[in-house]
Image (tube, rainbow, N blue to C red; front, side):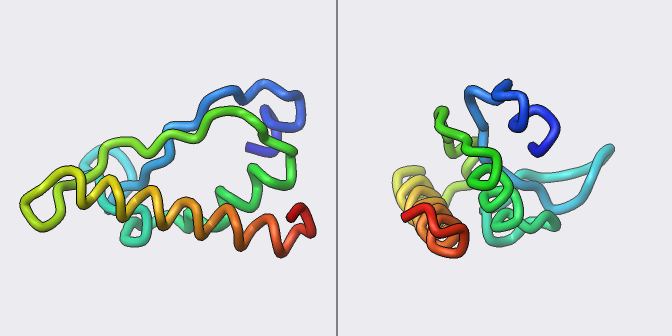
Length: 90
């Protein structure tokens, strides 16, 4: 993120995480993977990312894909707000 974002070369982020690194992994919710998604969100703020942030590969929740999508978007929004506050970007 810092390398390409610092050059303004990040335009779209498919925001997702997985339970393990390659070669065997399963997509999971953004608060449940092995990677710290807050660090990624904060790094995007640090480089001034102003592109598109897309929730991607969302697991089903409560038997309805809309529930998992709503949860993921709300979680992402909270991460953006927290990162922006910490970076004084609000």
